[in-house]
Amino acid sequence: MAVNKGQRPLIAANWKAHGDRHELSRWCEAVGTAPGNVDYLFLPPAVLLPMVQQLAPPFAWGGQDICPVEQGSHTGEVTAAMLLECGASHTLVGHSECRNLRADTDDRVAAKYAVAARAGLVPVLCVGETLAERESGHSEAVVSRQLAAVLATAPPPLPLVGAVLAYEPVWAIGTGCVASPAVVQQMHAALRRLWQSERGGESLRLLYGGSVKADNAAALACQPDVDGFLVGRASLVATEFLAIAKASIATTS
Ligand code: 13P
Image (tube, rainbow, N blue to C red; front, side, top):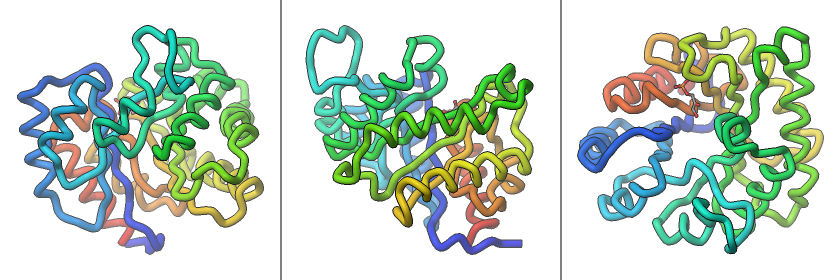
């Protein structure tokens, strides 16, 4: 049964360290002619952003990460200004691969969130617990801590309106092991409660990420607190990505 959530689902494609110019142009063409009633967000590797801008597809694009300061001696980082120059409107912040592989602490993630929001980018804050944290019963405490760290440094004047939060349990990312709809709903509801207690009625879209595919998207999308997906591996294939979007529209409009 379709669930009316009052807003279009947001389906984001995180290509991580995959893709080249040929795949990019084919993908933009395929997704650009996709049916409406869904908002798309494309997150390719940063070096491909100028080409996305040139192709000017009819959907939003953004960075996979952002430098925690406006500019400076931060080798390898991409600043908010650089993303904006490529036409980006969003950036991921605090993806678990950045937290784990590049030592992003809660404080660093909060700094990235603030720098992005101040520059006018929509930060897509990623939170999620490890398997050990889940098994020891600390899932909600971990994601609450990750969100609270950002909220504590993002006072009201920052452009939090239209905020996007992604719940990405680390144990479900790239493993083929998807969180059950009940677990996703429970975690999303907890995150929304915390958001509302700090930010009142400000709009928030809650995405789920972690082994989302065409064949599990519908069951997840119809959960009341799931407003879209942050898709990794399956987003590389345009037809699979579009099938995920289609499943989301069918269950949420
Ligand atoms: P997978 O969909 O490949 O599990 O990746 C999820 C993710 O990390 C999206 O940001």
